[in-house]
Amino acid sequence: MSSAAEFPGSEAEPGNLADRPYPGGIPDATVARLPVYLRALYALAERGVTTVASDELARSAGVNSAKLRKDLSHLGSYGIRGVGYDVEYLVYQVSRALGLTQRWPVVIIGAGNLGRALANYGGFLNRGFRIEAVLDSDPSLVGRKLGSVIVRHVSELEALVAEHGIAIGVIAVPAGAAQAMCDRLVATGVTSILNFAPLVLNVPGGVDVRKVDLSIELQILAFHAQRRSTARFVQATDRAAAEA
Amino acid sequence: MSSAAEFPGSEAEPGNLADRPYPGGIPDATVARLPVYLRALYALAERGVTTVASDELARSAGVNSAKLRKDLSHLGSYGIRGVGYDVEYLVYQVSRALGLTQRWPVVIIGAGNLGRALANYGGFLNRGFRIEAVLDSDPSLVGRKLGSVIVRHVSELEALVAEHGIAIGVIAVPAGAAQAMCDRLVATGVTSILNFAPLVLNVPGGVDVRKVDLSIELQILAFHAQRRSTARFVQATDRAAAEA
DNA sequence: CGGACTTTGTGCATTCATTCACAATCGACG
DNA sequence: CGTCGATTGTGAATGAATGCACAAAGTCCG
Image (tube, rainbow over all chains, first blue to last red; front, side, top):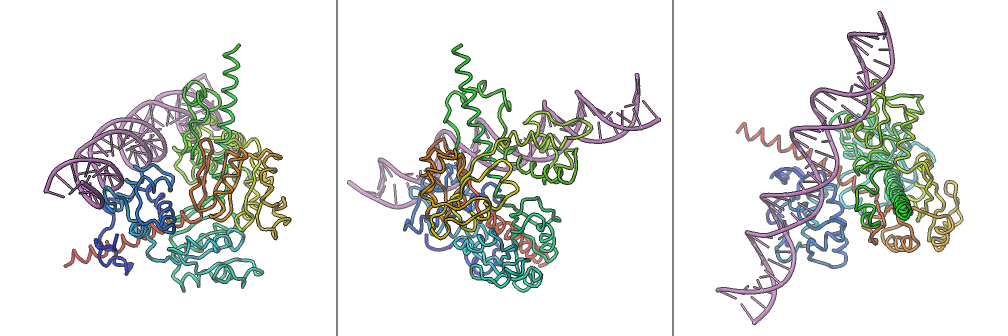
């Protein structure tokens, strides 16, 4: 383990990430899994584990171990053959790859149930993110305390973005208000947006929008559930047909 | 997702499941996009649009039109050349493919902010799903009304699953309680689980678990945001180096 | 009825992702 | 110091997904 000897002076200042960290870039599929690995690593660290083999880490992340190793190999060569990976060091390296060695200032728009759930999400948001403000258009919510911040009125959006140098906006408002909020975020210069509203946002090029949809996964579950019961049915009829 | 190997004979031979309903099955990537199309179609229908071309539908779903057409072609041939797709009919066909022509009985475990957000999600959950119960372990929440159901104590889980024939369980409890709730769901025979807790659930084969993670997408955003700023920096240093 | 125009559905080439399988490399131990 | 068992990192094989480009198939209009 023992510190980042191979990347001297790269962590302190954000601007100092000069040495192109990841030569050919990291595949999207890998990036999408890194947070899962990171979480599994934190869990291991909390259990006092200091070293882990790809096999075990893969199991706790729910992936195949070859995939895990290939994913990690895109970040560099941080394992020790015959031993495994140093948990603490790997936490650092994965965090660095994801850009979580700095804390990104975030604004959450919408203090409904979802906004509140996020503001209280604690654990993971606190590593790598700082919720600078939670906004809502409902005056009766303004002034209420959520997590560690106080709900402000949505009219303050532009001022707060400028004041805190907000880099990431989270949209947790009803679908009807989402596009307008998105437009305002973009107009103020925010280029990373996380959308919880159930619609596709329209943004100019250069803006990165990702979405989290509470119902899509449920619908995918329904698909598989249906497939299973259909399979049972087909199997039964086939058996019946075979007996006839 | 872990749903292979459970119904031997149906998956093994292509000829078995093969014909009805969807020859050769629908690719996972397509299934994941169907809910997005469905939503776009509902939005069009509400605006009074009766017919839509792949180009326009693709735009409102945020995908490439060739991909949209190929996706839809897996469900059947429901378009009219020279015209487009009938919105209402396509809504039906996509719903059918996803298994949303029936309403799946769902139980939500956890009546915190997230559970509440789900119970009030209304719109989409009402098409294809029926929330039969919301459970919590906190006695002070029991009896409260959420959406259209009353919060019950989590000790009633098994009885409610049996009574309502629950097919899908949603886990919206803190990470520490999630695995235990999952085990209880599985023990009662629930084979479709949607997990909002930030950990990887352990389930026996034949159980389909999907997860929605509020923080993973945020971490992916951070990655891209970092990449952008690093790119700017590298670009600047390269220019400076070229001048020297 | 025929030709111009529109849009679907899909074969094909290409890119991206997964998985296998094993040589290279490490720590441990006698 | 050499051998042994363990584990990584990665070439190569396979499989999945994407996007292009166009023939097939429809509408519409004169």
